[in-house]
Image (cartoon, rainbow, N blue to C red; front, side, top):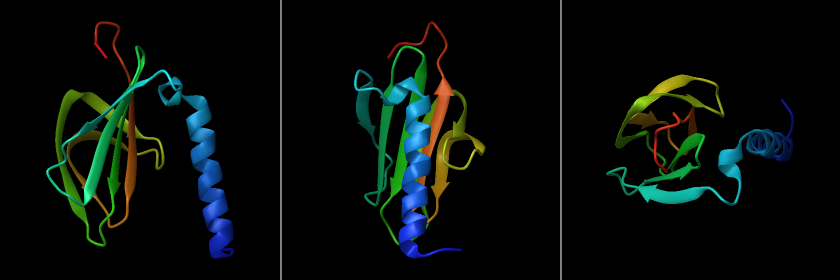
Length: 109
């Protein structure tokens, strides 16, 4: 299991590896917030010409739903690997999702 400090270190290392694999994390990506219809959930999008990332962060001690409705297809959570749609996303207490998808050539940033 390891210590709390080791778990944090390993978790940060995992996020760092994920960030290094995708160009949507580059400084040139467009970034904007989205309304989740819940004050306990922060939502924002990072996008460039080829990738899109929806970040959902639940700062609450309760499970929440981010009432978003992105209708551009399926996403993969980069943290867990689960596939999901970005519609009415249920987020566990203090949970986070990094929902990623490749963009079609005709999509606009």
